[in-house]
Image (tube, rainbow, N blue to C red; front, side):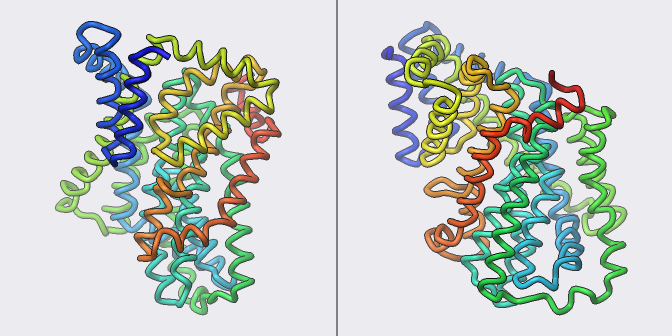
Length: 429
């Protein structure tokens, strides 16, 4: 390994250990590494930062973040919970599966696992507390719900992987649907079984005023269908669907529900800009570091290592999954996706693994990193909303984690789970 790569890796690891913001740590690592291998390192790093963000599909990220904020503040998320509670309220622990389903539906519009977790958790966790649910269970079910919908379009990570690995975002969107429903079925099963075994509360009021609840929730239920249906029907691109989500969310929140007013928009826009800036800053800095690794032929060296140690398709997938599980324990997976996917996708093709299927396998693994410490973002959000210790939430999330691990295994072993829908739609061969 060259001096530049060694210094960059050491700087990145040191930044992660010291708790430095991941974007800053990536930028410092890129600058230090490039300073040893190329003249004009600051200018080169800045140029690669800008080139990393110069992509039309990335425009969808701030738009979907804004759409998620609109739906949270405009009453759409609350009405999704209300209509699902109407249908499932007779189940013991009904708020568990209601949380899972609400987050899953919101995933079809918002695109961010952490935003989905926060939006639905802010509605369901206080209600669970009021009805006597164990708060550690509330934290676990909210966190696992956010992770389970991670593969459902328009997931932001699907967009990022499509851009950095040069894969059709539309094909990835369609490829993620069946695995996402597989995750949903697994997490629903776990939450229902736990509700039955622990005799968690039912919702005695679930049938009260059902007509009004259903009518009020109809626009909220139609919104994900319009977004996904528009992409599926070829009416607009994934990036254009983000703009449609914002526009539709504003119309429903301001004109139908009237819970969002013009005076709230500046603060909402400012919050969305801050969240978008944080994500895009990481993408740009990771692009600079990725350029350093490419310049130093790290992809070739990694390819040689894997070729020497991976005896076949199964061992290759096992190595990749262990790699991402390890990365997810020490840092956010987003930089790893940006840096590693352009390297790993061609290697997967050498083992006769479709780039689309391989991307979904990796992203299913990334979903696990959302709910295991020490980094698990959704787990921290769930614990904060429920006001419980992170380790108490971790103990409760073990069966959910095991189920998502099982669905990851199924996605890896049976390619048609991922490839059937995009192939049927003519998006891949």
